[in-house]
Length: 434
Image (cartoon, rainbow, N blue to C red):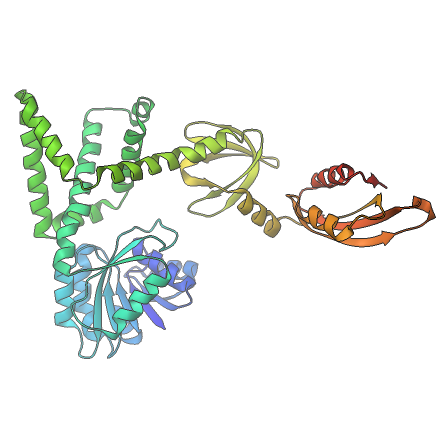
């Protein structure tokens, strides 16, 4: 299947191109910037085209992934060019206007499906991510798209474009505006964020991280989200009225009115206990890796950079609130804790098997004649650090005495020091190492 991403050189469009390429699809990206387009296409291993209309004609699925403010002009440009039986999609965060425009401009016999992925380009998979579909027509493509998203373990939500934009006025517009306002206020107060974290509760730190995630987005995208629908204007107006109302209660010492307002807001928050449980899990997860690292100082650890996915292995020398220091061979690495995840024992072991050359050893030991060599070999295989083990030779004779047997085991290890563990295990069985 041939899929085109109009605007596939940046942000979500670039992520979609790389993701679908890895799924085995034939991908073409377009961009007005030919130099950048060719460079990104080469990096992703996809095709590049400077011609949106020609690309729209030649592909089975065309995905528009351009900024919100240019989405409508691109729909007008490519919708009439979509081939009969093919599918046009958009992934903008506004759905009403683009949906109606695709319906109006689409060529006869072509189909369209408005989509809003509720995530940014920093994710690593679709698993657990929300994807909203807002179909206006019956389409043979709908089931295919739905099943594909389900196969990737995404959470698929189906609604109308109108309902989508209404909900986005709260989910995106209202929350982004409130958090940006907090960040801007902190700046105006000349507060040192790093110093404020020293005084902070886990909730404050979590809020700062969420704010950072929002303000780190393309500010032009943030502006577009805030200005593209009437729902957005209405949500901000109500927020401003509410802030003023609450502030007046405090200025005028209207304690009961303020308490009533907080209580009323709390009652509207659905299941408070469930919300507390979810936030407790988040806070616990944030602290869990720090606790693991604190208990691993002086020991070998494996960490993976969450964006480059590069694995670093070494002895953990020290950690600070923001960084860890890793002794990796002759190198000393300083890694930002927020950008890494700690590998568990199984992941560390699998990485070592795939990246370190194994060392093969033979070890001979004298056992009572009634021992079971295959069982001993299996126990050696189960030692952490042993790749596999087998019985290489069994010898009985005068040299080792009556009612004795000499067994030679062959095994592979990643770390040579595991040889000592194998020897200690055999000695624990009462064996004499030859």
